[in-house]
Image 1 (cartoon, rainbow, N blue to C red):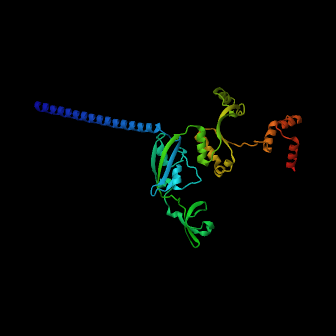
Image 2 (cartoon, helix red, strand yellow):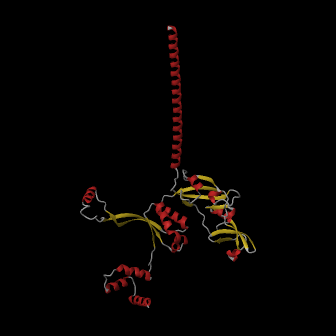
Image 3 (cartoon, helix red, strand yellow):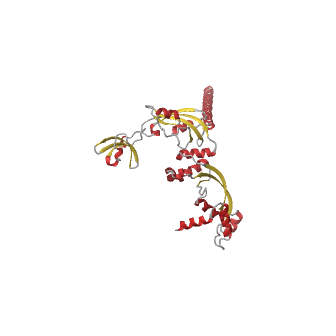
Length: 361
């Protein structure tokens, strides 16, 4: 009986040792697997960090960059757009246009999104070629946009195949005219076309006035006189009571009516973009319709507090200049002082009286 007991005990010890060995093996395997996963995660993190560092080291969204580019359809190489005057001349397009490198703001949709994505992270003097899918470029071709309408809706001079027409706010081109009906395609002329976009990064714009002018070129395509100034103005600001005053006011609430808010006059700086209001600007249709939106974009992208469009009147000695001068004299001048001022400005008082009397009749 003693021998059987010893045998059982030995067998139990052997089984226990085997279980310990298996447990240690599993533990070692788990540790090795954890280390492998940690190493893989570390490698992936390092790769992501390097990619982020590479991207942030180059041009970023919000940067102003000057680029030269030429865009053509992938299928047949039709010219879509270019900044190269030689390419434009070869293609016989834009005889009245000026072709030159263009300054854009990355991330603001001034060029196709795929092109912006390709430029981000690159440096000045880099080049690239991007294929922009039709859906992003000018949209897919939609057969439903080819419609048959009455020729009465088309001006008589445009009732022929190939004519470009505007019907109820939609732009299209006439395909056929048969009898009293016309077939008009309201798709974009380049709908369904993938576009190949070749570009070169020429410069990064840092000068603020150059940035402002580039934006105005993009919005309105006109050159303007503009400048920045820091103006100091007085403003009324609410005085915030300190903690002791607040506690005292809370204690007196039951006895007194709620006190009126207190204001103080303080001087504040206003970073201002000034734009000279030329006739070319004031008569510009896009400016008249969207000046508020344009001004807001200037504020957002240039980091200024406000935009002031300034109109200069009264240069020279027409009646406008006289009115400005008279307004500046003030009301405290006697008749002799006014005559002396008119004489200093080489203005004949009698002629002035005659002009004013004539204007009042």
